[in-house]
Image (cartoon, rainbow over the protein chains, first blue to last red):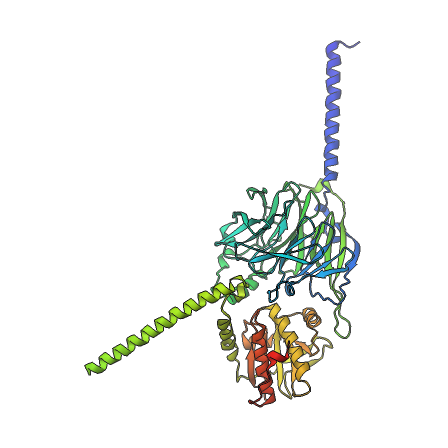
Length: 367
Length: 219
C-alpha cells in the first residue's frame, strides 16, 4: 500500500485539482455575472430586445422632442425637451403627473428646463440656465429655489445618496467637475480636464454626462473625447478609461479658434460638431455596466460602448443604430420614437420604446 | 486768431469732458443694470436696451431690400409655391440656429396677431424653415398651435440671401416684394416682440395716427 508521504502527495494533487476547477468555474460564473455581451454583436437587436412601449398620455399638455429621460427611484420619468425647455413628469405607464413650471410660484421666472436629476425621495432638481436650482417634489409641485454660488452653464446633474449634486461646468476658464449641496453651496470643485477642451465648452449641444455607481464613484464624459473619468466621491481622480473606438473622430484642436462674438462661436461650434464624433450620453445599465453613446456626425448614426466599473470594454466598433438611447436602468434602455404626422400635419406625442439588454455572450472573442 | 483757437480748444475740452462724464454715467448705469439682472439668464445679461438696439440695428439692414423670389415647399401637402406675395405678408424665418424659446413665443404671438387682426386688416402670415427638418417644423406647429402655412426652403436660397446669424427673423413684405419692417426677438423680452407687432399693425393699417396698443391687446 501507499506510504504516508505518497498519501500526502495524492491529497495535494486532489486539492490542487479541486482548487483549479473551482477557480475555473468561478471565472465562468464571473463571466456570466459580468453579462458580457457585445463583442460579437453587429446589430442593435443582438444586444437589446424590444420589451414594450410607453404611450404618453399627457392630456392637454404637449411635448415636442424628448432629448433626455431621467428615471426616478419610484419609476417616475422626467422627460426633458431641451430645445424648448419643457420638463414633463409622467409615471411608468406614461400618464401625466405634472408639467413642471414655476409660473405661479415665481412669476416672471425665465423657465427653460435644460438640466435635471432625481433626488433620493423622488424630488427633482431642475436648472433653467440661471443662477439657481429649482426643487420640485415627487408630484411635480414646486418646493423651493436654491441660489448657486456660480453663474455658469451646467451640463448634467446626478445626485448621490446624500442628495449632493454632481455636475460639471466651465468655471474660471477651466472645465470643472462640481459637488453642490442642496443649500447651493459648492462643496468641492476639481478640474483635471485636458487644456485642449478649455476653449470649447458645448453650451448648446448634448453631451457631458455624469453617473454614479453604488460605491460612490463618479464617472464623467466630455462631448468631444472618448475618455471616461472616474472620481472618488470627494472628486479625486481615480482612473481614466481611455479606449478610443475606431470610428471616433476627435476634436481638431488646431482648428479651434473662438471668437468674442457669441453667435459666431455658436455657428463655428455647429460646424465643428458636424465633423467630429460626439460622446453624447453616459448611462448606468446596471450595477456593474455602463453605456456610452456616441453620435457619428458624418454617418448620422449612433454607436455605443458598454464598459464595466473597472474599465473593461464590451464593444463592437462596427455596430450602428438610428434611434438615440435616452435613458437606461436595470438592464432596460429607453428610446423615444416620433410617429409620423397625419395628413393634416398633426404630430402625435412621441412614444417611449423599452428594450431589454440581452445576455448573448461570446467570451472567447473578448480581449 | 489766437482767441478763436483758444475758444475752439475750450469747446473741444468741454466736449471731451461731456463725453467722459457720459461714459462714466453709462458705465454706472450698466453696472446697476447688470446687478439688477444678475439673476437672469446669461443671454439676457446685457441690458435690454442694448439688446433692443442690436436687434433694430441688425434687422434694419434688411429694410427696403427686396425679398427674394424662391420656390418653397408646404410642409403639410408638399405643394411647391413661390414667394410672390399678392398682399402684405408677414414672413417669419425659422431655423435651428438661434433662440428656440424666442421662436416658440414669436410663433404663438404671430398666431394671436393673425387671429386678432384677420377681420380688420388684409394680410398673410407664413413661416419659412431654413435649416429645420419638416418633422421639426411640424413639431413647432404642434407646440405653438399656428394655423398659418409653414414652408421649407430646401434649396437654402434664403440663407444665402441674408447671411443670417439671428433667428427667428420677422419681415413685413409688401406686394412689390419690398421689406417694410423687420425685427428679431430678444430672449426673455416678450414686450420687445409685442412692440414690434404693434408697429406691424400700424403699417398694415396704413394709418400712422392709429396707435393700436398690442401690448394691451395681445396677452
